[in-house]
Length: 368
Image 1 (tube, rainbow, N blue to C red):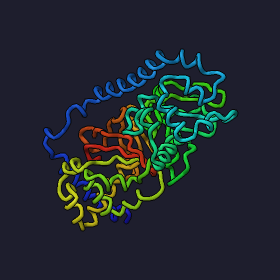
Image 2 (image 1 turned 60 degrees about the vertical axis):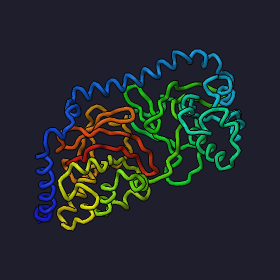
Image 3 (image 1 turned 90 degrees about the horizontal axis):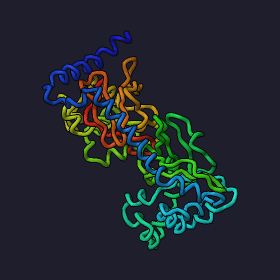
Image 4 (image 1 turned 135 degrees about the horizontal axis):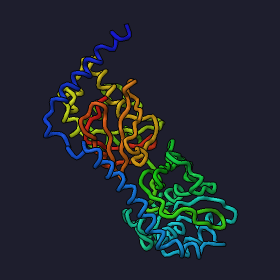
């Protein structure tokens, strides 16, 4: 009887797979099918990140270590020419005294001037930061800085391999908006999937500093809000609403969502090919099939692009037993493939941080 109840959903899924298999070979991205090439690309990404850290250490490690003791975290930052923006921000937000407190025993992920330069004005350099007078901007900057600080001393070897997290000193505004996430794989340590630890374990008299190449920005939106706010996800939003899954991504949680764009849905046969057609679906079997496909894009944890590994098989929330996707790591990208897909979906961009998870944008719908 259980098998009979599942039959309509299975038939609906088979109809989708059959239509997709009939797509012209010209619609497939051939370089995504070359697994040797993708492995080479992933290896190059790993080597590139290791090289970036090694180049930075070759340039700065000796100077940093010669200046470090017995200075406090604040004094260490002031003594180094790569932290002018950070020092300006710490002074502007009245945190200089806090980070100079003896016995503080804190951990600071310290962005370089080059990291601050990636931000929009007035947060992009020391001169602009010094000139800030808007109390709201100063308060926002203070929260951003506190998002870089742990209340205990944590060296890089104390950060577990794989995926882990830590709560920062930023006051919690929403669930998980004061938590940072570590991806420690293949000799590379990334924070929030993007920020590379260029030089770990710079000792200070009241804690430890890890030098990073991107400013960490706390999340402010749920996965649902990210999807609804992006016009490229109208088909995905329609599918989530149709299958009553939208509510899952509006509250607390820790999910990874591989989010197909409208262009990805357009590769499917009707009625799954656009928001309007999806909104008009009434067949329970098609809705059930669509629900399983959507859950095939969701992991029950946060996995950043650097956590996807080399052809790692990753369990999704779709119906088992054939509910795993295959991942290939990247920097701010990577690849993922469903069981019935002819080629890998490209992830671009990756690591969109939400308060309840992380979103990776993909160019194909994954088929279980």
